[in-house]
Structure formats: structure tokens, C-alpha cells
Image (cartoon, rainbow, N blue to C red; front, side, top):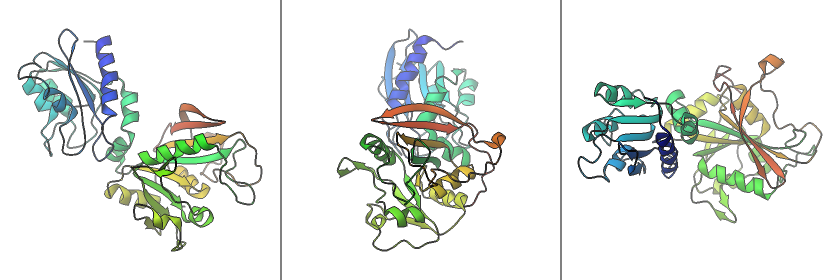
Length: 347
């Protein structure tokens, strides 16, 4: 049975509902229950670890038997395991749901398999509806599940000619206030913010996320990578979260430890050496490049060596958005093949 226009619209609504949920160890998921006639019966979304999953949240708003013959439209494959809550696939079967339409397969070894369970019970199942939108919403959770490491966003600001700083090393305020505000908003969405010791020594960044003059309620954990010592008076020591320091060149080991600490999204702020190392190692999933209409010249490039010597080795990206920010322009891009070259790089 083909997916209907009503089900497509219901998926759009389910994605809106999913975005209400908190980012964390569990994915953001939304659900809409439709009657056999296509009317909305109930809506639900996941509100965080230990709370009802989206499908169960929606079912809880109906009297017993009211979901019989209904269609459940869900942003993620209904789970198939018992954790702090029961399997959503079973809840849908017991409620008498006749059809399930979902966006993404659950990649979890334990939680996946809900679609098979539903089909075995006679439920009609369709997948892949609005998959790209759903994947973008829970990219960090998916990366953690699929690769066992955080989702990595590498950010830099550059002049129109690709420089991150003037020749004397000064780099503050290449971009305007709108771009800087956007950076702080995106920092607040990340679990951890990562810089190299060179950036700490040169710029003494606070690594906080700010909303105007105030600290944002959600702060990323500051992470400093490199062998050089960070001075005791450095601003990072005054961050709301205790900073993490890694005296290692092995980026996969750093990401593995951050993953073990429950950090599923990492925001790499700089500098050029560290950003280039993540790209060269195949450990960058997304790029945020803020481009200012200014020319700096000189040798302070936004990226350095990323392991490309020939044009056929170029790291290809797909631009997801071009975002005007005052006089500046933000390119949001993902790597076309984010898992190559092999993830063994050091810096």
C-alpha cells in the first residue's frame, strides 16, 4: 500500500512533535495516530529518558480500544526491547493498530527489529517516509548508535579568501554579530565543545554558550586536546562545567571516551590544526563554515593539511543550507562519505 498524502502530512507533524523532546541519550521521536478515515486521533512525543516513548504517549491519550484499526505515523521504527519502558511494537500490536508508517530504521542491536515484529503480528508497515528530515533531527544519536562515537561538527570562521586570521595571528571578529550569535546557539545544542591547546593559549576562549550577555541555560562541556599545559588562569577553568583535558594525539580515543561519558554531539571550534585533523581522520560528520566578506591574505588558512594531494582525493561535501547572517554567509554541509578515509588519523 502506497503512503498517502495524509500520512505524509502526519509525518511532518510527527517531526515537529519530535523536536519538542530533549536531546540526550535517547532519540527525539514524535508520533501521530490516525483513524481509518485519516483523522488525527492523538499525538505524542518522547520527553526524555525514563518517560513514555512517543507511540505510548499518543496511545495513553485514547480510551481502551480507540486505536483499533488506526495508523501510527512515527519518526523512528517502534522499538522492540524492554528497558525502562516496554516495547513500543508490542504496545501498538496490543492496541490493535492496523498500520505503521515510520521514517528511519532503529540501528540499535537491542532496540531494533520492531518492524519485523509488527509484520509478524499482521500489521502493515511502511518505512522511509521523510527519512532525510528525521535523520537530520537525530543525527547525533544515530552516529553514536552506528559508530560508537559522538557526531562531530567542525566549525570555523574565515575570510572570503579562506583565512582564519590575519598574519599577526589576530582573529577575533572576522564575522559579524549575527554570525557570532548563531555560533553560540549551535554551541548550546552540543554536548561538548572541543579546541586545541593552541587556541587556548592564543585566544583564551571561555568556551561557553551565551544568549546575549547571559549564559545559555544549556552549556557544552569544554574539552581541550593537546600536550601543552593550560594555564591555571585560563578562562576555560571558569566554565560552568569542569573542563576535560586530553594529552593525546589519538582523536578516535578522545571521541570514544566522550561517547562513554554520554556525550553524543561534539562541536569542534578550533583552531585550524585541530579542525584539519578531524577532517583528515575521517572523523568529521558536518561542517559549519562562516564566511565573511573580507580579504586577509597571508598564510593563516582556515584549514591546513587534510591529507589531500590530488583532486581525486578531495573530500566531497553536500551543502544542506546556505544561511545569510547579516553581512556573512554560513555554509552547512555534510560529508558525502563521512566514514572515509579510514578513521585512524592522528594530529
